Length: 129
Length: 195
Image (cartoon, rainbow over all chains, first blue to last red; front, side):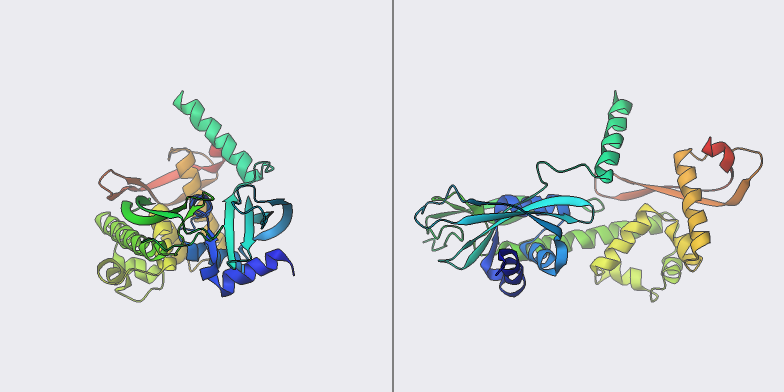
């Protein structure tokens, strides 16, 4: 079964088994005003991830039990015009899902909104100087 | 004894700290609340391992919403807006705004509506047109032009005459919302403004 589908189902059906890492929760709050874990999982499970594309799959390097490797799956997606990135992994032994990252993609293409923001920021800088 | 389990690696070597987190609302200011922060000593994961922070978060956000609602409604009243008129324009049951301010805070939708009204009071004019698309666009464009061109008056052809009602909002440091409001008759030459 698709790992993303399993994750979305877990967010909907067993939110107690899904854990956003501190940085992921903070970024969700700062970027999308999703202040609580409940809001974040509700957003994810109710179709908040739009135009999802698989980014990459890699092994969790800081796993203290390398004999039981954990695979991190990352995806790019949009919410409205905002491009975002999410990285998740599942711990089979504990049955827990981890949201390791939730932030803007590092190589995001500038959207029209970004370009407009850049122009406005530049204008503000010019006005201040 | 701390018996928490790290949801990432399963270690029970977890350190729990209390940290202060600040929540901010443009219309209500800041509020600080104490949150739990767990750190796994083995894999380094940081987070809320027992999902105990959501209730604190909810409580803080409700508090901010109540303060924001009170500030916005008080500012509207102080600025000469009649709550009965606002309720009529928005087709809210009478005394809804008083209840929101004094008793039961509004839903998230109601709180957002108030924020829009406080930022763009001319939306009340839009509501008064019964959301007529053309009249609404005219009100929107008129206010945009007034804002961009500093309400300068021009004379000439293609003059739009209407009761001008502009307002802007400032937040002062003690978290009170203050309107800078002006009501005046103005004439704006659209052609001149577009040049």
